[in-house]
Image 1 (tube, rainbow, N blue to C red):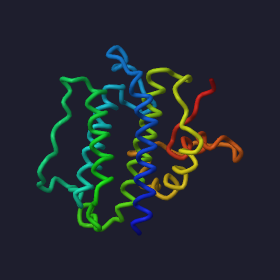
Image 2 (spheres, rainbow, N blue to C red; image 1 turned 90 degrees about the vertical axis):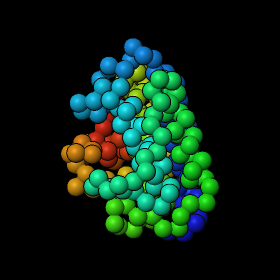
Image 3 (spheres, rainbow, N blue to C red; image 1 turned 60 degrees about the horizontal axis):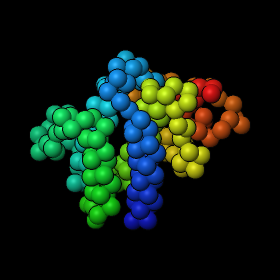
Length: 198
């Protein structure tokens, strides 16, 4: 993919981080044991997963992602002593900064070359969807909906990147949805989630 495509993906990442930052600021310590739309994960589990994902996307900015227990130099751990939300916010800023600087033209995941723009777009999708999950755990049906413009940009990403092989481990089965449903509803359905009625 071209430099222009990477720039577009980084802009999408920035928008996804802004949305998710808005849901994270509502998290309080008493929310951490609440259920989330992610099966088997409470909110504390989800925040830890989000931290691990940010580490992986930060690692990718160095030009590689290690898989299958291959040795690599770990990035600084999440400083939970400062609070999980604050720590995630620091990592999110670091992630955006890392991809906003010149990055390697070639990215290898395991042993497979992957266009950097694809990885950044995947990061934007994951961050947005988990931001929505956080909002549901904290505020229920009143949790902040994915903004329409962000959903429009992410829907083709989800369609391209979420494959049958990703289900049911990484994503639940796609949910049925009306063709004329709101774009955020269609995005969530594609990744196995349902926007509750408010």
